[in-house]
Image: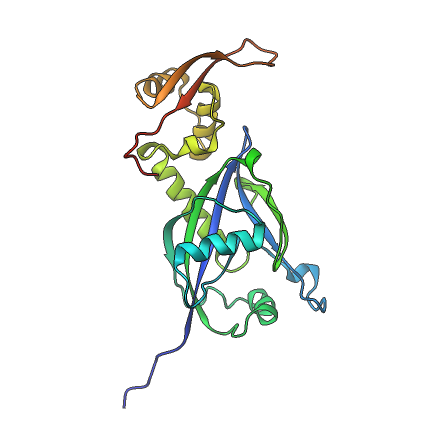
Length: 240
């Protein structure tokens, strides 16, 4: 007789939120909260992406929005699915199990997670930790520590998705102020792509884009020569 290999599986969502502070690309992380009895040491707690299990009667998109709000107090953030992670051992690390036993009814279950990413204007949102998050903070993309579960892999895949759609779907403009300079735009591209770009070629290519509108305005309050400002006008039928 064939052995029954079925097992109960939990489904979760994890959110990769990217922000740009004008100089660096950052990702929003939460610090795992210590149980009420303080049973875990500081060394046993880890940083992680905002994420949790999907409720039974809940869509994936609704779950992602709910989980993000519960853990960071961020609301109304656009989130887009980009990958699904299903390694059978993805939540079975020693530290992961120690923490899960305090916050999950069935910590031993396999978990498949649907990952979402979003681009956030950092000056418009102030994350605040809640629920089982001890802290919520922005971390520079090249300084992300060892995270819980397989969250480093999820961050890497999210960054790959961001890079792939940077030029094809113009999503980088979602990280900039409404009015920006071409220098700010080029720096954003260089930070995301992790490479220097030729200034002349970059500006020539950007100025070919009908969606980038030059304004009859210049920077104010800067010590150097004020640069011209531009804005991005997305086509009505263009999706992000």
